[in-house]
Image (cartoon, rainbow, N blue to C red; front, side, top):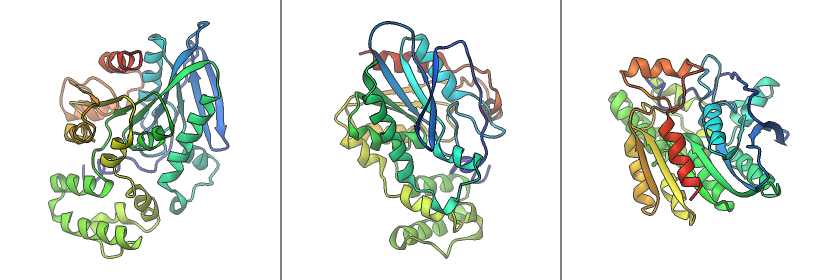
Length: 308
């Protein structure tokens, strides 16, 4: 699969899915951030989970163009059935792409953090909620880790990396393309030191192309191993046993950095929360099955943690 798992579907299109049987509100947080609030109907203050999506132009449902699996939508609906409200949102690049206002070289990792913080601040003013929890998936784990430092009740990482981005990519190259490891390591070191890299192998162009380097550089400034240590709130670290994008070893690194965290490796769960009994082909196909349920264990683990 070459480097497709390194920065998975970083910049492609989007798709959406809706379900009207839930009590839903569409909310604009900022001019670039729109999302859906699912709020169970009762008269008491509720806990709210803010769900932060993975890398790429992921919409509020967890979908991208030609990849409709509704992972985040189904997660939110599962929490709703457990009487937990949730807010999930389109990443800002979704709206920028729709309006043809996206300039790749201007994307900054910090923008995603700022968006998450804006959402936290928005719902802190909403008297319907007694507390706010952050759920970060994939890249959203690191985004949520930093945003959660602004004051929330708990943080949940699903398939979050435990290494800095450059170390993670080099580790993946060691498995997929060992011949590119030295060039990648040298190029990342050059990028970190100078803000730009020029002497990379042509086989690494998808990672080090000029327009993408500013985004990669800003992403590299955050180390999940460091950021998770800054959290003095309850933390839950989750990974799927069948995740072909983020290995269980990444969750182990996060757990080592935050020993007090709860830790759950879910058997047969893949990166998009689906249950996989078979091989990698079944795993890959699941990324485009819109009605394949989220594995129930994920819902129960998160619900139990949030309600403690």
